[in-house]
Image 1 (cartoon, one colour):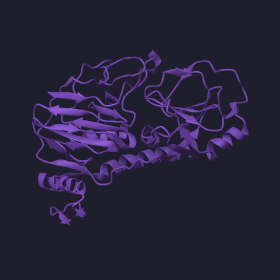
Image 2 (image 1 turned 30 degrees about the vertical axis):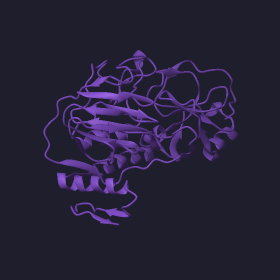
Image 3 (image 1 turned 90 degrees about the vertical axis):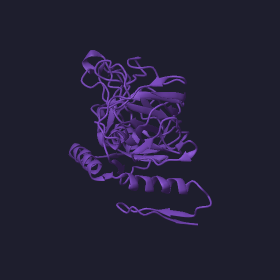
Image 4 (image 1 turned 90 degrees about the horizontal axis):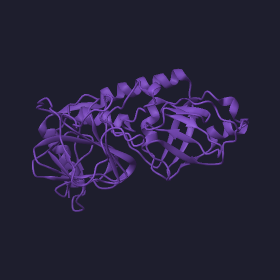
Length: 341
């Protein structure tokens, strides 16, 4: 069992969501940044589909009653185990009785915490995801809650990610043309490709609201309700675009000017309020190639490691947290760590 001491700003249980139920009016939900979720699961030996904690803006504080294997990915945060810094993007062993404090997310917007065996909860429509729009699935975490880990296989080694993604305060998102180009002026289509958009504080798991010069529509009526997909760039009457995330409604009536490609959805999910983004056109073939390259990179960058190498990498993180230690270094596959004072 794991006790929630502090729940963070918004922490929910998420897996890969409820796919294939849009025709029944059920949104997919699931992790906003599915790439970070999948990496976290792989670092602890889980299938990609296991449920993990999605932390937004600030992370949780947890007390562990039993020994567990965990991993933290996504937006950068200064996680500490009993007050000592611990690394992200690698397998961590947490002994019973210790307290993990994830703190504020310093770069990016969402972080993920996976545990060997996945977090257990009663599935709803084959998913353990919290749907913040409809209320399906478990409630968001609150202080005092108790978390249960599922059964996991026994592994003698762990993993780390060779080249972790880094999330900043700006992003370039690749898009393919939406199905309603004729609804917009030529100036609006040009502006979509050339303008800098700012992420509104009103953004949430339903969609990222953007602020910019309004994208002017030629038509002022609305479409009949039609199916919506994650990444759709909708434009309401205000001209301020909304890019849909996983908790979007199953249908919508605003015209769609573009769609963010699947390979860039994790970048969208990591944009904090106030961040800036640009859009760039790609073809559908390029979008498919980008997704294939992303999958290939995830395979290449996941490295198995024994306990000594993982401990050395953790020691490097610990050393970096102390001002008296000027430099620490460890190379992939090299079990020796060098620290200079």
